[in-house]
Amino acid sequence: MRTTKGFRAETRRKLKAGLREKFKPEPFLRQFEPGEKVVIDPYPLSQKGMPWPKFKGMVGEVQEKRGRAYVVKIKVGGKEKYIISRPEHLRRL
Image (cartoon, rainbow, N blue to C red; front, side):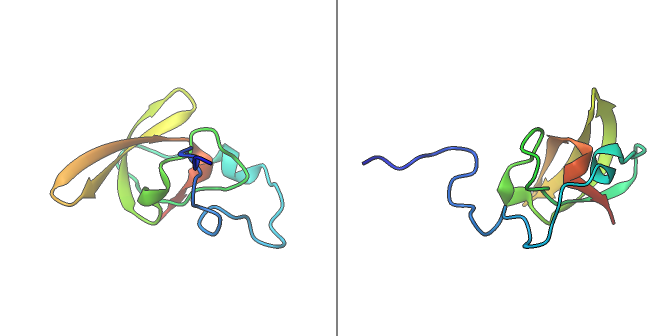
C-alpha cells in the first residue's frame, strides 16, 4: 500500500492538541502590526492557513496583512522566506 504524502503526514506528535486543550476563539482574533516579532506555533485545532510543520518554533517579522492572514519573513539558512499564516498559528515573542 502506498503511504500518504499529505500536509499532515508523519506529524502525529508535532500537531497533536493537548489532552485538555479545548477550542477557544481568542487565537483567531489576534492582531499584529507590521514589524512585530512573532513565533510560528501551529494551532492543531485549525488547519486553515497553517504553515508547513518544519517552520514550527521559528521567529519571524510580520511584513503585512493579507486578507485574514499575515505575511511573516523568516530566515532559513542563508535565505529569507515569506510565510503566509493566519493569526491562530502565530504568537508574540
